[in-house]
Image 1 (cartoon, helix red, strand yellow):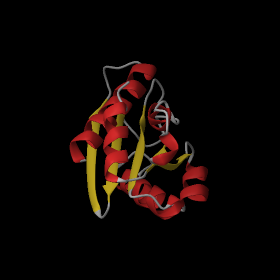
Image 2 (cartoon, one colour):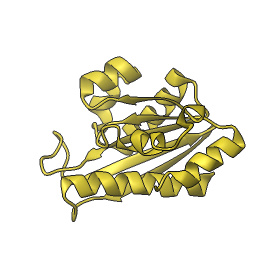
Image 3 (cartoon, helix red, strand yellow):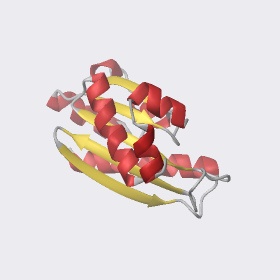
Image 4 (cartoon, one colour):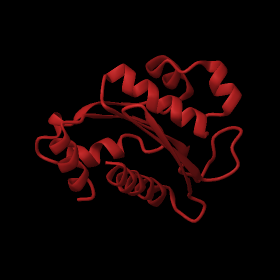
Length: 153
């Protein structure tokens, strides 16, 4: 289980985490939920797959979505910040991207942006997913998120 190390780190440090997921559809949260006692570290999660839900659930302005594009480092960072604030966790993770095979409007390729806001420090990462099937792209993104979170913590 790729999340066990992170689960233990969060537990040991007394930290909580929340995920704002788009392209991963809840897979990042689910991975951490597999650990018994997950409720001690997961504050909550929102799957905001559509523009409407990013706006309604995470309070991301339509102006920002139109300005930066739904798959962008800026939107992933806003997602991380908003989920941390909305849920009230120590760490916020924002994930947006194209898992394929179809692409979001105004995007050119399979890719993902992941932002991790730990306390007040934002880290933003890009993942090129061109060579992956849809399922593999989602799995690669979740694996990447856990590797980065473990490094940060």
